[in-house]
Amino acid sequence: MKTKKAGKKRINIITLGCSKNIVDSEVLMGQLKANNLEVYHEGKIDENTSVVINTCGFIDNAKQESIDTILEYSKAKEEGRIAKLYVTGCLSERYKPDLEKEIPNVEEYFGTRDLPQLLKSLGAEYKHELIGERTLTTPNHFAYLKIAEGCDRPCSFCAIPIMRGKHISKPMEEIIKEAQGLARQGTKELILIAQELTYYGFDIYRKRKLADLLRKLNEVEGIDWIRLHYAYPAGFPMDVLDAMKDCDKVCNYIDIPLQHISDKLLKSMRRGITADKTRDLIKTFRKQIPGIAIRTTLILGYPGETNEDFELLKKFITDVQFDRLGVFQYSHEENTHAFQLTDDVPESVKEERVEEIMELQRGISGKLNQLKIGSTQKVLIDRLEGDYYIGRTEHDSPEVDNEVMINANGQYTRVGDFANIRITAAEDYDLIGKLV
Image (cartoon, rainbow, N blue to C red; front, side, top):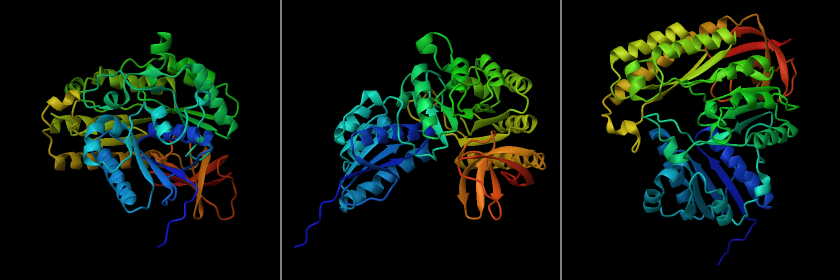
Protein backbone atom coordinates (compact mmCIF):
# COMPACT_ATOMS: atom_id res chain seq x y z
CA MET A 1 0.00 0.00 0.00
CA LYS A 2 1.37 3.41 -0.97
CA THR A 3 1.62 6.09 1.69
CA LYS A 4 1.82 9.80 1.14
CA LYS A 5 5.16 11.33 1.89
CA ALA A 6 4.94 14.06 4.49
CA GLY A 7 6.27 17.36 3.20
CA LYS A 8 6.85 20.71 4.78
CA LYS A 9 3.67 22.27 6.07
CA ARG A 10 2.63 25.55 4.45
CA ILE A 11 -0.18 28.05 4.82
CA ASN A 12 -1.99 29.60 1.87
CA ILE A 13 -4.03 32.80 2.39
CA ILE A 14 -6.97 33.55 0.08
CA THR A 15 -8.24 37.15 0.21
CA LEU A 16 -11.72 38.21 -0.91
CA GLY A 17 -13.35 41.62 -0.78
CA CYS A 18 -11.95 45.08 -0.23
CA SER A 19 -8.59 46.69 0.46
CA LYS A 20 -9.24 46.50 4.21
CA ASN A 21 -9.23 42.72 3.87
CA ILE A 22 -5.99 42.90 1.89
CA VAL A 23 -4.32 44.67 4.81
CA ASP A 24 -5.71 42.11 7.27
CA SER A 25 -4.27 39.28 5.20
CA GLU A 26 -0.91 41.06 4.96
CA VAL A 27 -0.79 41.45 8.75
CA LEU A 28 -1.66 37.77 9.18
CA MET A 29 1.11 36.76 6.75
CA GLY A 30 3.62 38.96 8.57
CA GLN A 31 2.77 37.31 11.87
CA LEU A 32 3.04 33.80 10.39
CA LYS A 33 6.40 34.53 8.79
CA ALA A 34 7.67 35.92 12.09
CA ASN A 35 6.80 32.52 13.57
CA ASN A 36 9.02 30.89 10.90
CA LEU A 37 6.06 29.36 9.07
CA GLU A 38 5.95 28.99 5.30
CA VAL A 39 3.15 31.20 4.02
CA TYR A 40 1.85 32.17 0.57
CA HIS A 41 -0.84 34.46 -0.77
CA GLU A 42 -3.13 32.68 -3.24
CA GLY A 43 -0.38 30.25 -4.16
CA LYS A 44 -0.35 26.58 -5.09
CA ILE A 45 -1.87 24.00 -2.78
CA ASP A 46 -1.09 20.39 -1.93
CA GLU A 47 -1.87 17.83 0.77
CA ASN A 48 0.45 19.63 3.23
CA THR A 49 -1.23 23.03 2.80
CA SER A 50 -3.55 24.68 5.30
CA VAL A 51 -5.80 27.24 3.64
CA VAL A 52 -7.12 30.39 5.33
CA ILE A 53 -9.95 32.18 3.49
CA ASN A 54 -10.38 35.85 4.42
CA THR A 55 -14.01 36.47 3.48
CA CYS A 56 -16.22 39.43 2.56
CA GLY A 57 -19.80 39.78 3.77
CA PHE A 58 -20.70 43.21 2.42
CA ILE A 59 -23.45 42.58 -0.16
CA ASP A 60 -25.11 39.57 -1.82
CA ASN A 61 -22.57 39.10 -4.63
CA ALA A 62 -19.62 39.31 -2.24
CA LYS A 63 -21.25 36.90 0.21
CA GLN A 64 -21.93 34.41 -2.55
CA GLU A 65 -18.33 34.58 -3.77
CA SER A 66 -17.12 33.91 -0.23
CA ILE A 67 -19.48 30.95 0.23
CA ASP A 68 -18.50 29.49 -3.15
CA THR A 69 -14.81 29.79 -2.24
CA ILE A 70 -15.34 28.07 1.12
CA LEU A 71 -17.22 25.24 -0.61
CA GLU A 72 -14.47 24.91 -3.23
CA TYR A 73 -11.76 24.45 -0.62
CA SER A 74 -14.00 22.31 1.58
CA LYS A 75 -14.26 19.91 -1.35
CA ALA A 76 -10.48 20.08 -1.81
CA LYS A 77 -10.07 19.06 1.84
CA GLU A 78 -12.52 16.15 1.45
CA GLU A 79 -10.51 14.95 -1.54
CA GLY A 80 -7.23 15.20 0.35
CA ARG A 81 -5.86 18.03 -1.82
CA ILE A 82 -5.33 20.29 1.20
CA ALA A 83 -4.68 19.49 4.84
CA LYS A 84 -6.84 21.94 6.80
CA LEU A 85 -9.27 24.79 6.17
CA TYR A 86 -9.89 27.91 8.24
CA VAL A 87 -12.24 30.82 7.56
CA THR A 88 -11.94 34.38 8.85
CA GLY A 89 -13.14 37.87 7.93
CA CYS A 90 -16.47 39.65 7.58
CA LEU A 91 -18.70 36.77 6.42
CA SER A 92 -17.41 34.63 9.27
CA GLU A 93 -17.95 37.45 11.77
CA ARG A 94 -21.52 37.96 10.60
CA TYR A 95 -22.70 34.40 9.99
CA LYS A 96 -20.46 32.13 12.08
CA PRO A 97 -23.25 29.95 13.60
CA ASP A 98 -24.91 29.44 10.20
CA LEU A 99 -21.60 28.64 8.51
CA GLU A 100 -20.62 26.14 11.20
CA LYS A 101 -23.94 24.38 10.65
CA GLU A 102 -24.02 24.50 6.85
CA ILE A 103 -20.31 23.94 6.09
CA PRO A 104 -18.95 21.89 9.01
CA ASN A 105 -15.90 20.70 7.06
CA VAL A 106 -13.91 23.71 8.29
CA GLU A 107 -11.54 23.48 11.24
CA GLU A 108 -12.61 26.81 12.74
CA TYR A 109 -14.35 30.08 11.86
CA PHE A 110 -12.95 33.39 13.12
CA GLY A 111 -14.25 36.98 13.19
CA THR A 112 -12.62 40.21 12.07
CA ARG A 113 -10.84 40.81 15.40
CA ASP A 114 -9.78 37.25 16.22
CA LEU A 115 -6.22 37.39 14.89
CA PRO A 116 -4.52 36.04 18.06
CA GLN A 117 -6.91 33.07 18.20
CA LEU A 118 -6.47 32.35 14.47
CA LEU A 119 -2.69 32.42 14.86
CA LYS A 120 -2.87 30.01 17.80
CA SER A 121 -4.91 27.54 15.72
CA LEU A 122 -2.29 27.79 12.97
CA GLY A 123 0.48 26.97 15.44
CA ALA A 124 1.74 30.52 15.75
CA GLU A 125 2.06 33.07 18.53
CA TYR A 126 0.76 36.64 18.25
CA LYS A 127 3.76 38.96 18.39
CA HIS A 128 2.79 42.38 19.78
CA GLU A 129 6.12 43.87 18.74
CA LEU A 130 5.13 43.44 15.07
CA ILE A 131 2.52 46.22 15.18
CA GLY A 132 2.60 47.93 11.79
CA GLU A 133 4.65 45.21 10.10
CA ARG A 134 3.19 43.04 7.38
CA THR A 135 3.96 41.14 4.19
CA LEU A 136 2.76 43.06 1.15
CA THR A 137 0.58 41.30 -1.41
CA THR A 138 0.56 44.37 -3.65
CA PRO A 139 3.62 45.37 -5.69
CA ASN A 140 6.12 46.96 -3.28
CA HIS A 141 5.77 50.42 -4.82
CA PHE A 142 2.22 50.96 -3.46
CA ALA A 143 0.52 49.85 -0.27
CA TYR A 144 -2.77 50.30 1.50
CA LEU A 145 -2.42 51.98 4.89
CA LYS A 146 -5.34 51.33 7.24
CA ILE A 147 -5.70 54.20 9.71
CA ALA A 148 -8.85 53.06 11.52
CA GLU A 149 -11.14 50.09 11.95
CA GLY A 150 -14.92 49.94 12.22
CA CYS A 151 -17.52 52.68 11.73
CA ASP A 152 -19.89 54.78 13.87
CA ARG A 153 -21.97 56.10 10.97
CA PRO A 154 -25.68 55.10 10.96
CA CYS A 155 -26.13 54.51 7.20
CA SER A 156 -29.32 52.50 6.78
CA PHE A 157 -28.07 50.16 4.05
CA CYS A 158 -24.69 49.22 5.53
CA ALA A 159 -23.76 46.11 7.52
CA ILE A 160 -20.13 47.10 8.10
CA PRO A 161 -20.66 48.16 11.74
CA ILE A 162 -22.17 44.71 12.36
CA MET A 163 -19.05 43.03 10.97
CA ARG A 164 -16.31 45.49 11.90
CA GLY A 165 -17.64 47.10 15.06
CA LYS A 166 -17.33 50.68 16.28
CA HIS A 167 -14.78 53.14 14.93
CA ILE A 168 -11.31 52.64 16.42
CA SER A 169 -8.52 54.94 15.22
CA LYS A 170 -4.96 53.70 15.07
CA PRO A 171 -2.62 55.93 17.11
CA MET A 172 -0.78 58.41 14.91
CA GLU A 173 2.68 57.29 16.00
CA GLU A 174 1.87 53.70 14.94
CA ILE A 175 0.70 54.88 11.52
CA ILE A 176 3.85 56.95 10.99
CA LYS A 177 6.03 54.03 12.07
CA GLU A 178 4.20 51.74 9.64
CA ALA A 179 4.58 54.27 6.82
CA GLN A 180 8.30 54.56 7.50
CA GLY A 181 8.63 50.77 7.42
CA LEU A 182 6.80 50.59 4.11
CA ALA A 183 9.04 53.31 2.67
CA ARG A 184 12.10 51.27 3.65
CA GLN A 185 10.62 48.35 1.65
CA GLY A 186 10.38 50.55 -1.44
CA THR A 187 6.79 51.77 -1.14
CA LYS A 188 6.28 55.09 -2.94
CA GLU A 189 2.50 55.44 -2.75
CA LEU A 190 0.37 55.16 0.39
CA ILE A 191 -3.35 54.65 -0.10
CA LEU A 192 -5.07 55.67 3.12
CA ILE A 193 -8.09 53.51 3.91
CA ALA A 194 -10.66 53.09 6.67
CA GLN A 195 -14.38 52.52 6.78
CA GLU A 196 -14.53 56.31 7.27
CA LEU A 197 -11.36 58.40 6.88
CA THR A 198 -12.66 61.78 8.03
CA TYR A 199 -13.60 60.55 11.52
CA TYR A 200 -9.97 59.62 12.15
CA GLY A 201 -8.66 60.51 15.59
CA PHE A 202 -11.89 61.64 17.26
CA ASP A 203 -12.06 58.60 19.55
CA ILE A 204 -8.43 59.01 20.69
CA TYR A 205 -7.78 62.74 20.59
CA ARG A 206 -11.36 64.08 20.91
CA LYS A 207 -10.78 65.94 17.66
CA ARG A 208 -10.69 64.89 14.02
CA LYS A 209 -7.03 64.53 13.11
CA LEU A 210 -6.90 63.47 9.46
CA ALA A 211 -5.32 66.80 8.41
CA ASP A 212 -2.64 66.48 11.10
CA LEU A 213 -1.95 62.92 10.02
CA LEU A 214 -1.51 64.01 6.39
CA ARG A 215 1.03 66.64 7.42
CA LYS A 216 3.05 64.08 9.36
CA LEU A 217 2.89 61.47 6.58
CA ASN A 218 4.03 64.15 4.13
CA GLU A 219 7.33 64.23 6.00
CA VAL A 220 8.07 60.50 5.62
CA GLU A 221 11.13 60.09 3.42
CA GLY A 222 10.72 57.82 0.40
CA ILE A 223 6.97 58.34 0.06
CA ASP A 224 5.94 60.32 -3.05
CA TRP A 225 2.16 59.96 -3.19
CA ILE A 226 -0.49 59.86 -0.45
CA ARG A 227 -4.01 59.03 -1.62
CA LEU A 228 -7.33 59.39 0.24
CA HIS A 229 -10.02 56.70 0.05
CA TYR A 230 -13.46 56.45 1.67
CA ALA A 231 -14.14 59.96 2.97
CA TYR A 232 -17.61 60.74 4.32
CA PRO A 233 -19.43 63.81 2.94
CA ALA A 234 -21.51 64.91 5.97
CA GLY A 235 -19.49 67.26 8.15
CA PHE A 236 -16.40 66.91 5.97
CA PRO A 237 -13.46 68.54 7.87
CA MET A 238 -12.33 71.44 5.70
CA ASP A 239 -8.85 71.51 7.25
CA VAL A 240 -8.19 68.38 5.17
CA LEU A 241 -8.36 70.57 2.06
CA ASP A 242 -5.80 72.93 3.62
CA ALA A 243 -3.50 69.96 4.24
CA MET A 244 -3.96 68.78 0.65
CA LYS A 245 -2.95 72.23 -0.61
CA ASP A 246 0.06 72.48 1.72
CA CYS A 247 1.39 68.93 1.38
CA ASP A 248 3.08 68.25 -1.95
CA LYS A 249 2.86 64.47 -1.57
CA VAL A 250 -0.90 64.35 -1.08
CA CYS A 251 -2.51 63.53 -4.43
CA ASN A 252 -5.17 65.82 -5.87
CA TYR A 253 -7.62 62.95 -5.54
CA ILE A 254 -10.39 62.03 -3.15
CA ASP A 255 -12.74 59.06 -2.97
CA ILE A 256 -16.00 60.26 -1.38
CA PRO A 257 -18.99 57.89 -1.70
CA LEU A 258 -22.13 60.05 -2.10
CA GLN A 259 -24.62 57.18 -2.68
CA HIS A 260 -27.43 59.38 -4.13
CA ILE A 261 -28.65 62.95 -4.70
CA SER A 262 -32.40 62.59 -3.97
CA ASP A 263 -33.16 64.30 -0.66
CA LYS A 264 -35.85 61.74 0.06
CA LEU A 265 -33.42 58.85 -0.37
CA LEU A 266 -30.52 60.57 1.41
CA LYS A 267 -32.79 61.02 4.43
CA SER A 268 -33.92 57.38 4.31
CA MET A 269 -30.29 56.29 3.92
CA ARG A 270 -29.46 58.30 7.07
CA ARG A 271 -26.58 60.07 5.36
CA GLY A 272 -26.85 63.33 7.31
CA ILE A 273 -26.56 65.51 4.22
CA THR A 274 -28.84 67.10 1.62
CA ALA A 275 -28.56 67.46 -2.14
CA ASP A 276 -27.74 71.15 -1.87
CA LYS A 277 -25.01 70.56 0.71
CA THR A 278 -23.59 67.80 -1.47
CA ARG A 279 -23.36 70.12 -4.47
CA ASP A 280 -21.81 72.87 -2.33
CA LEU A 281 -19.21 70.42 -1.00
CA ILE A 282 -18.14 69.42 -4.53
CA LYS A 283 -17.90 73.09 -5.53
CA THR A 284 -15.72 73.72 -2.50
CA PHE A 285 -13.42 70.82 -3.38
CA ARG A 286 -12.91 72.15 -6.89
CA LYS A 287 -12.47 75.74 -5.76
CA GLN A 288 -9.96 74.91 -3.01
CA ILE A 289 -8.06 72.21 -4.98
CA PRO A 290 -8.06 73.11 -8.69
CA GLY A 291 -7.66 70.00 -10.81
CA ILE A 292 -8.76 67.61 -8.05
CA ALA A 293 -10.04 64.25 -9.28
CA ILE A 294 -13.21 63.21 -7.46
CA ARG A 295 -14.20 59.55 -7.28
CA THR A 296 -17.63 58.66 -5.96
CA THR A 297 -19.80 55.59 -5.49
CA LEU A 298 -23.57 55.37 -5.86
CA ILE A 299 -26.27 52.94 -4.78
CA LEU A 300 -28.98 52.17 -7.32
CA GLY A 301 -32.32 50.50 -6.58
CA TYR A 302 -32.55 51.55 -2.93
CA PRO A 303 -36.07 51.01 -1.50
CA GLY A 304 -38.41 53.72 -2.75
CA GLU A 305 -36.15 54.89 -5.59
CA THR A 306 -38.56 56.14 -8.25
CA ASN A 307 -37.94 57.02 -11.88
CA GLU A 308 -37.96 60.66 -10.77
CA ASP A 309 -35.19 59.97 -8.23
CA PHE A 310 -33.21 58.18 -10.90
CA GLU A 311 -33.58 61.06 -13.35
CA LEU A 312 -32.37 63.46 -10.62
CA LEU A 313 -29.29 61.29 -10.18
CA LYS A 314 -28.56 61.21 -13.92
CA LYS A 315 -28.82 65.00 -14.14
CA PHE A 316 -26.52 65.33 -11.11
CA ILE A 317 -23.87 63.12 -12.72
CA THR A 318 -24.15 65.02 -15.99
CA ASP A 319 -23.82 68.36 -14.23
CA VAL A 320 -20.94 67.42 -11.92
CA GLN A 321 -18.86 65.37 -14.40
CA PHE A 322 -17.16 63.08 -11.88
CA ASP A 323 -13.66 62.02 -12.86
CA ARG A 324 -14.25 58.50 -11.52
CA LEU A 325 -17.50 56.78 -10.60
CA GLY A 326 -18.62 53.34 -9.47
CA VAL A 327 -22.03 51.91 -8.64
CA PHE A 328 -23.51 49.25 -6.38
CA GLN A 329 -26.83 47.56 -6.94
CA TYR A 330 -28.76 47.82 -3.66
CA SER A 331 -28.55 44.67 -1.54
CA HIS A 332 -31.23 44.11 1.12
CA GLU A 333 -29.13 43.22 4.17
CA GLU A 334 -30.64 41.72 7.32
CA ASN A 335 -30.09 43.58 10.61
CA THR A 336 -29.57 46.89 8.82
CA HIS A 337 -31.98 49.79 9.33
CA ALA A 338 -33.12 49.60 5.69
CA PHE A 339 -34.07 45.92 6.04
CA GLN A 340 -37.39 46.99 7.57
CA LEU A 341 -38.20 48.77 4.29
CA THR A 342 -39.73 46.99 1.33
CA ASP A 343 -37.13 46.08 -1.29
CA ASP A 344 -39.52 47.33 -3.95
CA VAL A 345 -37.30 48.05 -6.96
CA PRO A 346 -37.29 44.95 -9.22
CA GLU A 347 -33.91 43.35 -9.87
CA SER A 348 -34.29 43.92 -13.59
CA VAL A 349 -34.83 47.65 -12.99
CA LYS A 350 -31.81 47.80 -10.68
CA GLU A 351 -29.68 46.18 -13.37
CA GLU A 352 -30.98 48.54 -16.06
CA ARG A 353 -30.22 51.57 -13.91
CA VAL A 354 -26.71 50.33 -13.17
CA GLU A 355 -26.04 49.87 -16.89
CA GLU A 356 -27.48 53.28 -17.74
CA ILE A 357 -25.39 55.12 -15.16
CA MET A 358 -22.20 53.34 -16.18
CA GLU A 359 -22.88 54.13 -19.84
CA LEU A 360 -23.39 57.78 -18.90
CA GLN A 361 -20.12 57.77 -16.94
CA ARG A 362 -18.28 56.06 -19.79
CA GLY A 363 -19.07 59.02 -22.02
CA ILE A 364 -18.00 61.52 -19.36
CA SER A 365 -14.74 59.66 -18.75
CA GLY A 366 -14.01 59.48 -22.46
CA LYS A 367 -14.59 63.21 -22.89
CA LEU A 368 -12.38 64.10 -19.91
CA ASN A 369 -9.64 61.79 -21.20
CA GLN A 370 -9.67 63.47 -24.62
CA LEU A 371 -8.81 66.76 -22.90
CA LYS A 372 -5.55 65.20 -21.65
CA ILE A 373 -4.16 64.50 -25.13
CA GLY A 374 -0.97 66.49 -25.60
CA SER A 375 -0.35 66.92 -21.87
CA THR A 376 2.58 65.43 -19.98
CA GLN A 377 1.63 63.36 -16.94
CA LYS A 378 3.67 62.02 -14.04
CA VAL A 379 2.93 58.29 -14.10
CA LEU A 380 3.73 55.54 -11.62
CA ILE A 381 4.52 52.36 -13.59
CA ASP A 382 2.63 49.42 -12.07
CA ARG A 383 3.55 46.54 -14.36
CA LEU A 384 4.76 45.32 -17.76
CA GLU A 385 1.94 43.52 -19.57
CA GLY A 386 2.75 42.10 -22.98
CA ASP A 387 4.15 44.94 -25.11
CA TYR A 388 2.93 47.68 -22.77
CA TYR A 389 3.95 49.31 -19.53
CA ILE A 390 0.83 50.00 -17.50
CA GLY A 391 0.82 52.90 -15.07
CA ARG A 392 -1.33 55.47 -13.28
CA THR A 393 -1.46 59.22 -12.79
CA GLU A 394 -2.06 60.84 -9.40
CA HIS A 395 -5.74 60.91 -10.38
CA ASP A 396 -5.99 57.12 -10.46
CA SER A 397 -6.05 54.48 -7.75
CA PRO A 398 -5.07 50.86 -8.48
CA GLU A 399 -7.71 48.33 -9.55
CA VAL A 400 -10.63 50.79 -9.72
CA ASP A 401 -9.49 53.72 -11.90
CA ASN A 402 -8.07 54.56 -15.32
CA GLU A 403 -4.65 53.45 -16.51
CA VAL A 404 -1.94 54.78 -18.80
CA MET A 405 -0.54 52.47 -21.50
CA ILE A 406 2.97 53.00 -22.86
CA ASN A 407 4.30 50.89 -25.74
CA ALA A 408 7.40 49.11 -24.44
CA ASN A 409 8.91 48.57 -27.90
CA GLY A 410 11.88 50.91 -28.18
CA GLN A 411 11.13 52.55 -24.83
CA TYR A 412 12.42 51.54 -21.42
CA THR A 413 11.38 52.39 -17.89
CA ARG A 414 11.25 50.38 -14.69
CA VAL A 415 8.22 48.96 -12.95
CA GLY A 416 7.79 50.81 -9.68
CA ASP A 417 9.39 54.02 -10.97
CA PHE A 418 7.80 57.31 -11.93
CA ALA A 419 8.02 58.42 -15.56
CA ASN A 420 6.96 61.53 -17.47
CA ILE A 421 4.53 60.44 -20.17
CA ARG A 422 3.21 62.55 -23.02
CA ILE A 423 -0.39 61.54 -23.74
CA THR A 424 -0.85 60.82 -27.46
CA ALA A 425 -4.31 59.20 -27.51
CA ALA A 426 -7.23 58.48 -25.23
CA GLU A 427 -9.91 55.83 -24.81
CA ASP A 428 -12.96 55.95 -22.55
CA TYR A 429 -11.13 54.59 -19.53
CA ASP A 430 -7.46 54.60 -20.54
CA LEU A 431 -4.78 56.98 -21.73
CA ILE A 432 -2.06 56.07 -24.25
CA GLY A 433 1.30 57.79 -24.22
CA LYS A 434 5.04 57.68 -24.71
CA LEU A 435 8.04 58.42 -22.57
CA VAL A 436 9.25 62.01 -22.65
